[in-house]
Image (cartoon, rainbow, N blue to C red; front, side, top):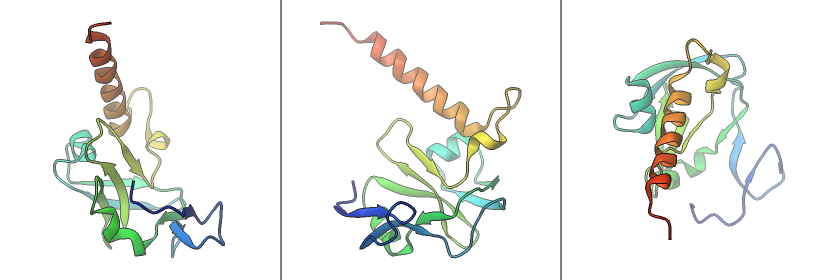
Length: 137
C-alpha cells in the first residue's frame, strides 16, 4: 500500500530494519485520551463529532518517521490526540477501513454499542445488499 517492502512491526520483529509500527514513547495502556477527528472521515460520520475521548490499551503505534508517507496515498490519518500523535487511520477509497489505537469493543455494550462498531456493521450490511442486488451470470 505505501510501497514499503520490508515494513515490520516492532512487537513481532524488534530487530527489523524498517519498523512501520514502533513502540510508543509512552504506553497508553489504561489511559483516556481526547481525539480530534477529521471532518468527512468515516470516524467523523460514525461519531458525528470532531472530538471524542477513548480509552487505550496499546504500546505500539505508527512510527513517526512514516507519518508524512501515510498521508500521501489512500491511507489517511483521520484522528490525532492533542499532541497530534496518530490515533486513527482510514483508507479513503474503501467502504469502511478504519484502524484505531484504541479498542472500540471495550466500551461497547449491547444497550449502547460503540459508534465505530455500529458504522462498521452498517457498512457491512450495505456491502451485502449491493452484492446481493447484482445480476447473477
